[in-house]
Amino acid sequence: MAADKALSWSYTEEFMPESEPARAARARAAEFGIAPVSVGTGALLRLMAAASGAHSVAEIGTGTGVSGVWLLEGMVDDGILTSIDIEAEYQRAARESFVMAGVKPARTRLIAGRALDVLPRLADAAYDLVLVDGDPQEAGAAVEQAWRMLRPGGILVVSDALAGGRVADPARRDELTVAVRELGKEVRSRDDGLAALIPTGDGVLVAVKRQQ
Ligand SMILES: C[S@@+](CC[C@H](N)C(=O)[O-])C[C@H]1O[C@@H](n2cnc3c(N)ncnc32)[C@H](O)[C@@H]1O
Image (cartoon, rainbow, N blue to C red; front, side, top):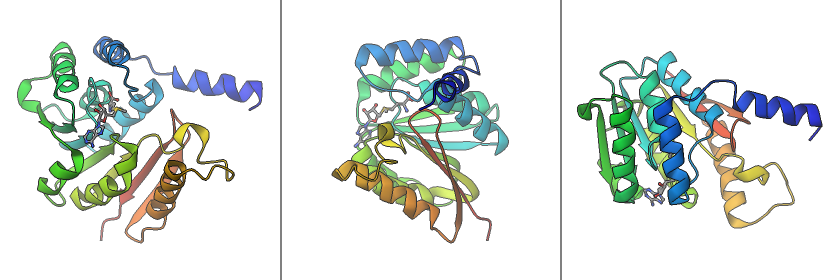
């Protein structure tokens, strides 16, 4: 990548300052060794939550709450974030992040469990935005569920959509890279959606479910 492009990239990532609670959640993520959304991705999530007037958001992959804090900052004041993670310990840390952010406990519904077990229990067409940021091996199945859960006009967001740069390289044919590449193509070809791939963070795939 040209030097000025790399510079623009890092400038973009740091363009919006991160709130203290999100920074603290990011520090906890580092302690646990998990990779939260980047600052640029967080700013994008907040913007999409605000632009869609999100009341109801679902997230796969709570982690320590970095993406959750950004989403809650953009949602309406009484909006509810439903967030799923297989690790209850991470969710305890996320809960602390939400308290630090001044979020009332009733605004977060944290569900500990495997995403593909939990998602089928969540309602159809009930969510304004769904973020898929859990196990990359399960992203395809999670996206199917997420699409069902979105209301018309709702927004799907998939993180790590460029898989550390591997998706853009046609020579990379390992199973996970191929699956992420195929998922992007599948989402972009949906008749009932409009998609865009944004090179923020590790790639953010976004699609809006068309109003019928
Ligand atoms: C990339 S991290 C999420 C980071 C979080 N969204 C943030 O920005 O702070 C991925 C999370 O998915 C969780 N996870 C992994 N496999 C899962 C599964 N099968 N079901 C639910 N959660 C899973 C991990 O425990 C981890 O917390």
